[in-house]
Length: 307
Image (cartoon, rainbow, N blue to C red; front, side, top):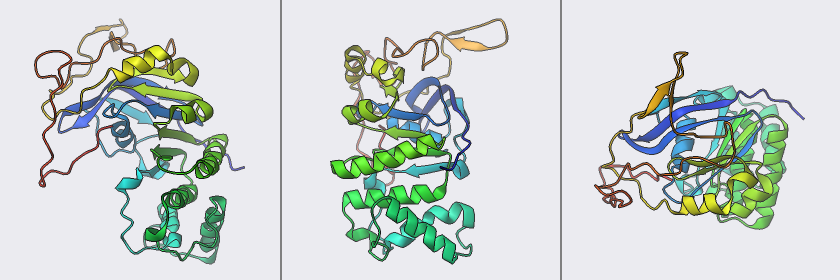
């Protein structure tokens, strides 16, 4: 087993959003090296937005991300399947071989040893013999296996997965989870956005439950409580393009050592399974709890999925 040195990922009062409108509010916590962290929450909770912040696609509106995130060379990312264009004429071999680009460069020499590494990665996910198949002919589960094979070749210390097990069969999920556990045992950090709470409870020791802010972050059994899940389900507002910019640390205090702290307790520090007891009012059109429905995206503006 190849040991990997990953850095902790530190979120410090992090606020993320689009066009200065917040979708993730004041998130503070620490993801330890080798952790297997599930991110869960209702649609519109900011889960995928957080992943985009971790890979550096979104710059923070407030706060910061430090440590082992935001640098492409240290990250491997599997997006949601509906974000992958399978119409492009590429073979399974070439798709998986893209995992070597970080080390070889786009125009780097590709040797016999590299070809063997691609074949080995395909065998690892049960796709031996699929090398010449067009990606567009794969089933959803086969495509996800190929994407996991590509991640294996990237050799990254941090792996981010956005809905990796959606619309795939149980056998495929079991095979891919074996690979995820192997990555964690090697010291890699795995952060996965998931909807299946049974799978989270069965496989992920740590969970961040979000509803635009942290409802709970810590040990899975202590986060996924009935009370916390009920609070998360109560978050019904959709992303609102008219929401005001969210200033970091809107109410806070100085600890006497030059450090400013807000009065919200986020993340796993001090206790598990507890976060805000109230949602932020961003995105409301006057009355708290009355969410304004977003306008349909025009052709001139690329739509975002803010979950």
